[in-house]
Image (cartoon, rainbow, N blue to C red; front, top):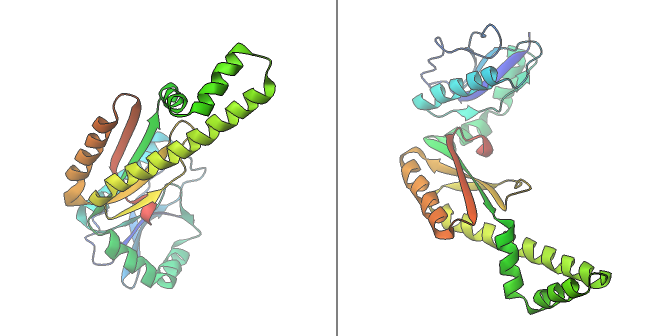
Length: 237
């Protein structure tokens, strides 16, 4: 039977899994697969598994319980192996890299920060800062058939939007990074200028959250800074 994988831990982890409910309906029994110094926390994989709210919540609850007791490498929802034997074989084959990751992530959490900026506010700033953009903007308003000038104006604005967003994303990441151990920059959604995950020691979580709130206060109402976490450190596995 296919094996659903929640996490990988060291074999000396307390592994209190007996009371945990796994994915599926009815909930699968959570168990362990051991291979030397490593253990995978698994259950039987239900047929037709999809990311339903109940199953995603069950997956998350297993991870949170494991991480409360020690280091665990969280697997993303939906990871299924052929069977227990193949899961054990992977643990054995990648033993050293998993052990290294467990040491790095011990006592750590992930926080995700997404930043977006009001488009009108950004456009006004760009127009104020560029004589050429301001000139073309005024010219095309007075000459609505000036297609070449309209194209050039659009190109200049697009270039400036990209440059400013890249600069701001870099500056925000650099200001928040000292409160974290590591960062992973992800692809930003269409309406955002930054999507970045931070690896933070558990005892520094409050300080990191405060740093994000201070960053939000620094930028004002034209920016939206969303903090999600603490999370299992998916982005760093």
